[in-house]
Amino acid sequence: MVAGLCLVLAGCFSCSVKQNPQQLKEKTAQTTAALKSDAKAVAAGVREGWSRDKPLDLNHASKTQLESLPGVDAAEADRIITNRPYAHPEDLVSRGVLTQREYGKISDRVTAKK
Image: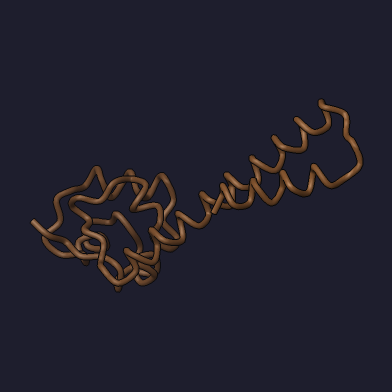
């Protein structure tokens, strides 16, 4: 996909008025940065889609995976990790790791496997 877009951009540049090499270099860098950002967003969406159907295991999930849960920030993810292991997802509330309201946002997306 990226290679195809680069070819299209190269074709556009060759058809346009002759540009200063520095301007061309800057425009190429900007376009590349935008493509990189878009590719990261697509990859994040794919990861989210894959994990949406499978509950996240509180006992084994990484900090990044925990932060992907709705309303879970870095501090909450750290608290979840620090208080492992969990026998049941509800332990997050009973141990005071999350409030009932916070847990309610993620309850259908988590599990606790040993």
